Image (tube, rainbow, N blue to C red; front, side, top):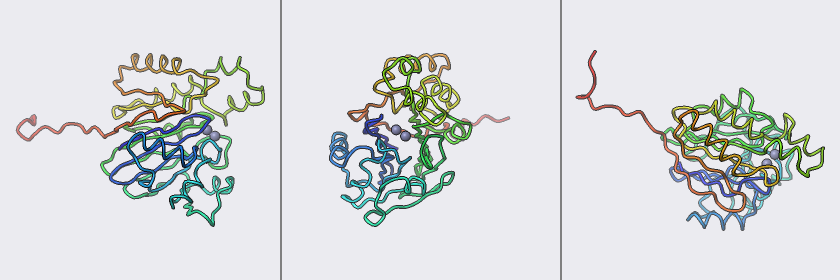
Length: 272
Ligand SMILES: [Zn+2]
Ligand SMILES: [Zn+2]
C-alpha cells in the first residue's frame, strides 16, 4: 500500500492511501487546487481518487471535501454525526454514512473505523487494509488514546499517529487560556508524552513504518518529536522507518507492505 501525507496539521489534513487501483483520501482539509498540485508532485492524478473518507467535521479535516467531491464526482464516506455537524450539501454530493466500530469496503480497500475521543460529533480513526493483508492505521485529533483506540490500531504494518504538542510549549505559549485548556483536555489533542506512551504500546513485530502527524506549528517542534521517537526506538530496539508529516508540502511516499514470516522450503523443515 502506498501512503502519502499531502498535508498534516491545523492548517489542513489530507492523507492519500492507494492499493490495487483504489485510492482514497483520508480527510480533505485542503482545497481542490492545492490537493491536485500536491498529488501531481508525487506523480498522482486527483482523478484517480475513488473516495474521500472523513475523520470528523473540523474544518482542518473537511475544508476541501465538498469542493473536491463535486468537482470530480467523488463520494464522501463519513459518520452520521460528522455529516449532521458539517455543512456538506447532501443533494450536491454522494455521501455514504458508516457507523463507527464497523468496517466497510471501498474498491480494493477495507476500512475499519473506530470512535475516537475528541470534541467533535462522532469522530473516527481508521485501519485501512489492502487485499494482501497490509494494514495501516491513522489516528489524529485524540483527546487521549484510550484502550479502545490502542486495541484498534494494534498489529498494523504502518502507523500515522498524532503528536500534537509539547506540554511546556503549550503552557507557556501565547494561546488564550481557554484554547490551551481545550487542547489539553481529554477531548482535545494528544501531547507528545501521551502520544509516545501510546506508540510504545503499539510497537509490534509487524510495525515497520511510523509517521507522526498533526504537529502543532506553534506548540511543538519537529526536533522534539524526532528526539523522543529516536529515544523510544533505541530503548525498545525496534527497527522502523520513521518520519514526521509536513504541513505545507507532501511528506513523501511510504510503501507499506506486510512482512510475512519466511516459510522455509520443505527440505529445510526441521523434523521433531
Ligand atoms: Zn485537526
Ligand atoms: Zn479536530
